[in-house]
Length: 468
Image 1 (cartoon, rainbow, N blue to C red):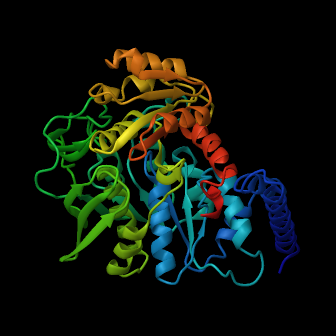
Image 2 (image 1 turned 180 degrees about the horizontal axis):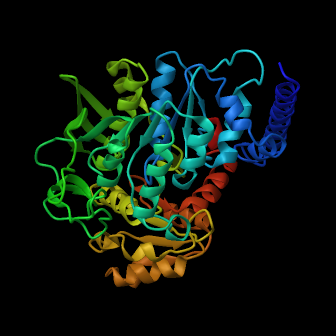
């Protein structure tokens, strides 16, 4: 070993030791789960720690990115890997920037000898993908979808798609798991040298023929001509073809060939792969979560997990941190769901509208940096779905007044809406309003989710998110 290599190993060992000590101190003092700060410590001591430690994972790494569904999809993949006897090194707390990746690696991977974990699984922020690909050199990259989100951070959808293409063009022969129904995602499969596996809907009777107003992929990502859609499942996900070039929706390798929603209770789906059909009964709602499940199953198959094992593991997944997470409070069921952009909000609102047992609703909107400081997306989300009926709504967060104004213009009577700044106080108000048989639904942006869940953990109603 050269003196330089020896020095790098010593630095890595110090970085891992310091990161683990920081994580232990954070948890011992009740200040969090140590999912980010230990990674910052490790990166400060050894800037190349992600590349060095991930190279010690014998089965390589899987990276999961996209606008919506990253955390849910990654959790499902992790469940399948565990079921197959390969527990992953995983940033399961959802810390998806470089410090979160470094923290997970430092927690699990020794800088010397053989790693106990044989595969890495990392949820990665959309804008972090280029640096993650360069450092992790993943075996598999998973792309769930690409929608407009946090324009103040990411820019337009086309900007993100171009950034992804550049990152993958230098990534070597990586396997891609792609949503065939999203044009900007499916187009990544045309990059020379990649090996794509496509996932999409073939179930009859789903969707319409017109793009929704939230559609962000109206033009061909290859030639710029206006795409022609023959079927639209939601937003811009659907069956499409370009009249200006040969680009069209690829035939799915793994198909969602059947779908039935059960409101907030879940969804029943049939997944078809290599001539076999598999029943996939989810405990989380909506077609959007069936997409997540199908993409997770496809990823697991590429990772050499048996299809039946993958489907069973994915179907068994229940509470995912703040993603239609269920718990009980004051004798009532509570559903906690993250919303952060128009498409995601519309899918959750659709599940609520389809659920007969839903009671009072809390909507907590923050505009902190992690939420996105631009909350104009509220005007693109279809809150008009809530106008019918007499559901009581409590709005909260730093932009509670904006949310109240949005509901007013959605046609919701002011007497149905209460404004409370603190999301936790808002949830308590909704619990007081609810009948014992009603479900209280809490819709939150990211930092409102963290704050609310911290208080719920303090009350003993949910486990800390990093321990799940």
